[in-house]
Image (cartoon, rainbow, N blue to C red):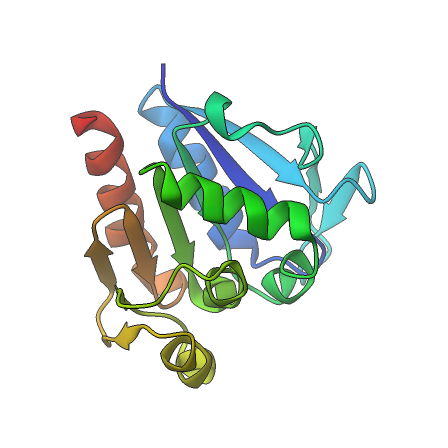
Length: 170
């Protein structure tokens, strides 16, 4: 069974956590909410709770096939943790799937994995993604090797479809 880490922190975008989390489970893929370890429960921008199932301090790259990084303002908090950026970078380096939507491009930039990649993101952080070395493309989903990116909640069907396609082929 494939196993996916879904990164969470306060101020996450509720749909960008729960849509892929539940959609992947529907496909028989194990999903795990991985937090920064600062608390047991994180709140969405609207206050919806997400309970940490494992702390990033205990997450091992070898135990996961993919990492999904949701947006909202949580990525601005997530990228402050070296354990998070190291985890994302190591997943990418080992050829495992890294999927980021909306403001999650901030985590990709801080992880140093965008250089030479095609990627998309929420329009407000387009300059950050470009400055991190990516070629920005304004599409609902962009797949570049083991990197999948999308722009916003409206792109979640295409985003999740590509994640599932990647995991089922490998």
